[in-house]
Length: 218
Length: 143
Image (tube, rainbow over all chains, first blue to last red; front, side):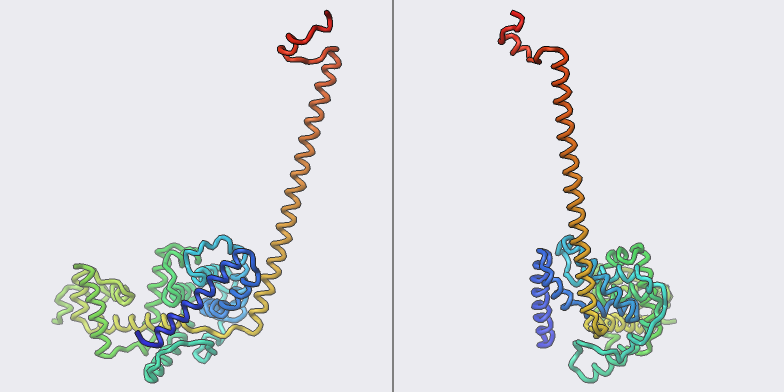
């Protein structure tokens, strides 16, 4: 395993353990522990709200509403999902019911020069340059997607929420969520010029994808 | 004629499969597999989807800097919500206690009324009410 990846896993485990301890205390009525949970997770919640709504004012409202709902329903959190995943679902639900969901007034916050508090990247400088260029293109393309398509792509392909959870939180059917995902991915692919592949990548992807196919049908 | 055309599928017919296989699903349709193996255009599209999905996943590690003062605002809002919740609980609890008190008082009044009514009936008849057993044991007042 690469040292960076191992460190990432360890740090994430430590962070998850810390959140679990705080969560237990908060569920027992310790408000200070809940405040610590908010402090530890609010930047991530803010990031998701910004990805979904695209402007600071709406995102701030959604973050606030998310934590109020989380506070009120903390006793109902069974712990069968990660706390952050639970927060992501609440954030998606709050965003979908926010007045800004249907109003398109996006500013510059999703631009590539937005300040990043933490961005764990590959260590290969050339790969970083390529990634940065593609990332800039991708963020601009996401910015151009209609809200309803962008939300499904962000929740599924960035935050890895299951189709069922996305459908529930956005108040749509699972087939509708899948259709939106399909359309959103297609639009992104069509609008990104930087997705061109090298011959080596083609060969590797074919080997991986079609080998999986052959295992699947064997 | 290319190999892809010989398989009898057009690129549009395997487009959905490409997105699925890029997301990690296998291509089930053997004809679609054969088409992709022989079609540079579909291979290119497959790679584009893989790159797109990989790039989207990398956004997961981005953490944007929150608006200034956001944490303080959120904590204040939770505090206010918590206070409201506590007040609501208190009011609800008092309402319950009040309702319980009224119910208990009502029941007490009902019992009292029933006892008084029974006593007044006994007075009207001029004789104590006794069970049949007691009546048999105790000597009759009339004797």
